[in-house]
Amino acid sequence: MRWFKKKKRTLPEDTTCRNCGVQTVGRYCHECGQDVHAGTGQSTLKLIGQALESAFALDGKAPRTLAFLMIRPGFMSEEYRAGRVNRYVHPVRLFWMSTLIFFALLISQINFGNADVRIAGEQMTGENASMIINYFAKLAPYVTFLLIPMFALLLALFFWRKKDYYMYHMIFTLHFHTFLWIFCSLLLIIGLFTRNVTYPGWLSMLLFFTPGVYLTMALRRYYQTKSWWQALWKAILISLLYFLLILLVTGLVLLFVVKVFFPELMES
Image (cartoon, rainbow, N blue to C red):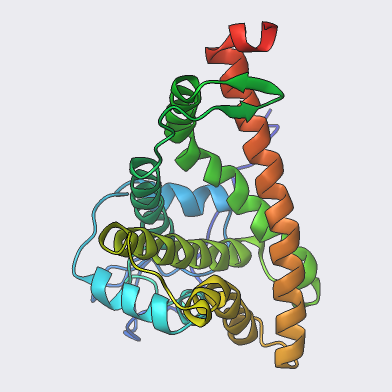
């Protein structure tokens, strides 16, 4: 007796490839090789699994993907929803690469020296704090995978009327965070060469608000909000709630690192 029946996945009625427009006769397009189910509703685990097979295999698609991602907020997520997937770098693959690059740059520029740091209510020397941050740095890229579903859940709550698959909120989240990591990485790289340069106040404010402006434009385009004002206030609330989640998760991870790798500090 079978308790679980395997679900049979049939081909859609329209077997036109959504990536290149060619009429297909099977599951995979004979022209570009894309699965006819690509871009359609599927589980988040399957979405991630498809990309992790070749997580580091960036090819000639990268320049086009990065250009659209950086200068056209929401466009890449829109393309994925439309089924044009294979012509771009997969969202999970691009996100993972940008995450590793960003945290590598960030940690390389952190220098505690001999400064004392207070973490979890304990006073630690700069040397101890540096070691804790090094442990945290190894976990940080993976911790971001905990935050991604949270951001996607916020999108699902704020745009529940759209009745989208959760997967589509995940795609938008991955694209936005990829932009965020690339943007921050560029700032870190520029900072290496301009450490002694004093930036005008207006430029600092512009850079500070750039991610928020990008998010607002992306929400407006992808979710087709009724007005710019609606996209703006939703972007502000989502950002504030997400910031609180980041603080909570970061604090918990730091406590975990201290408790597991430096138990003597918790006992002091």
